[in-house]
Structure formats: structure tokens, C-alpha cells
Image (cartoon, rainbow, N blue to C red; front, side, top):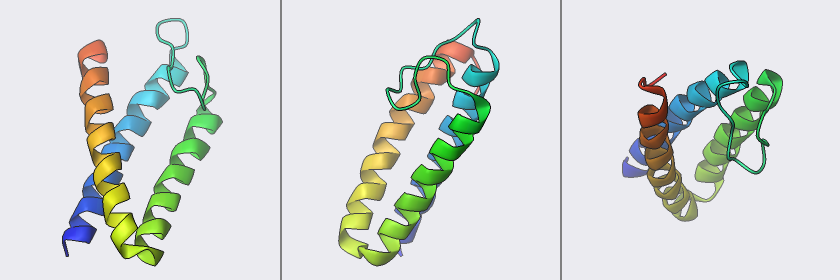
Length: 95
């Protein structure tokens, strides 16, 4: 049960980061992305595919590799919590 809770928390934080990154992609003249995989000015489809991939890989990994999946969920949740809070300070909103 705790594995499911960790996965849900990580997925919700990924969704928040997705929304924030989408805002960056829609406003390239105001912001730039620091994620090396996306580049400084990612397109909206690139952002959508990237986060869809991250969320699917995390969920599938948790399903097939229970113990490692739990560790990955916790690691992703910690990283995403940091990123979401940092972005919130830049943007002034959670979206």
C-alpha cells in the first residue's frame, strides 16, 4: 500500500511539473527550461511526450520491480517536490 501512495505522490508531482514546463514552452520569450533532455525552449509536443514517457516508465517500473519501483517513486517525488516548489517561486503559481 505504501508503494502505491509513493507512486501516486510522484505522479501528481510529475503532473504539476508538466504543467509548469508547459507554461515555459508556451512563453519562450519569458522563460527557459534547464532540463537537458528538453533543451532551453522545448515545443509543446516535446514537453507532452517527455512527461508522458516519464509517467509511464515510472508506473510500469513500479509494477514490475516492486522494491526498486518504491525507491524510484520516492526519489522522483523528492526531486519533483524540489523542482515544483522552485518553479512556483519563479512563476508565483502552482500550475
